[in-house]
Image 1 (cartoon, one colour):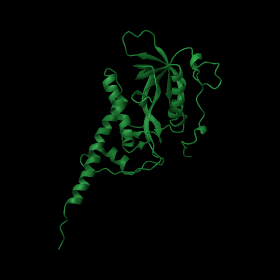
Image 2 (spheres, rainbow, N blue to C red; image 1 turned 60 degrees about the vertical axis):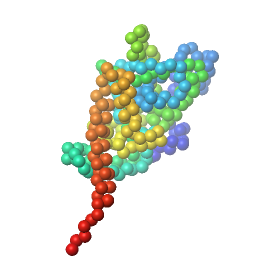
Image 3 (tube, rainbow, N blue to C red; image 1 turned 90 degrees about the vertical axis):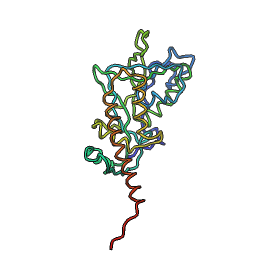
Image 4 (cartoon, rainbow, N blue to C red; image 1 turned 30 degrees about the horizontal axis):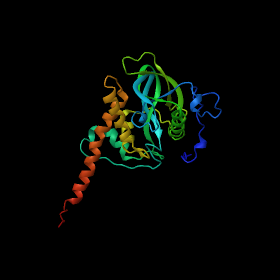
Length: 265
């Protein structure tokens, strides 16, 4: 059954955050009743496009999780259309996996690939934590509930966030959105090459899936140069190796069409 983004009531809302005042029965924060600010940790598109007002932000990491492109998306970075692409040209023999993935359509609907978190002892995931206060708390949670939970399939969890700054003392308790295997949009593991091939042909309301991957890689490269994310950078490398095949194909077709054909006889 296709998910209708116009009917958010079909997906239950996540429970109220424990930092919200218990005197508010609907879970909506009333500025004067809030005991403390709320921190929200983002590790995907939230690192460059939070979409809500905040008081401050910190770059840092959480322990015990690895970032994975295992969540499907048919709204923000994907669609419900089947995309057919063919790639032939320079370097094709050495990239047989790319040709296989692009010559045949993906099953409808056509999801993009976005990140979620996988429990992984000893690992850490870098991102950005946003501090929201007063009326910002209710507004941010309402916005993120629609963006991440209703349209994205994510659930909420509390984690300990460790700021990057050296003078930080104790970790900060933060809210994070995680897509689990139980949600209907979950795609699960695949090779980095197959994930890259799927990202290339996916686009949604928020933009192309390629932009999502490259912006996330750029964030890690410029804000967390000391951190490792083999999964992310392997997908970026695979995508860059596929793109020349696609561009070469288009250029070859244009050149072929412009060359006069000799008549036989």
